[in-house]
Image 1 (cartoon, rainbow, N blue to C red):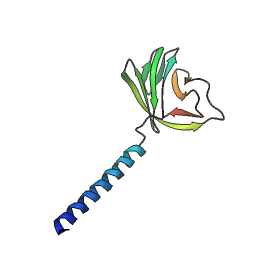
Image 2 (cartoon, one colour):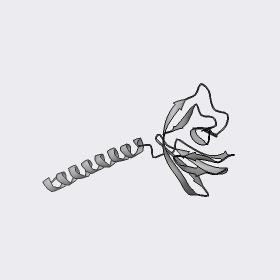
Image 3 (spheres, rainbow, N blue to C red):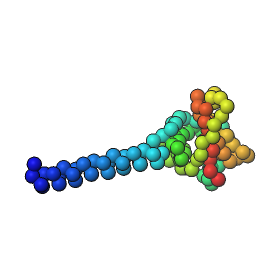
Length: 117
């Protein structure tokens, strides 16, 4: 093989390695939903200063972020952390302290999301 072909193959190999590493880093950042469901809120509540009125919401959570939407429009995004439960949750539900959303539990899951303050 000529020297130019060998150099070109080396460049292609390095580019492929970089693309593989970049894809792994993007996947590790928690961009893929861990859970996505619909939840009902029966009383108005606040999350990070945003009011959620009583109604149905689409909820998705990644490793680090919660997104709450209604009618395909994002209402709020909030940082979260995950905690373990002793058993699987029976229902998907918002947990409030007064009128502030503090946790989200997901049906069939042994972990729940805690909303950052």
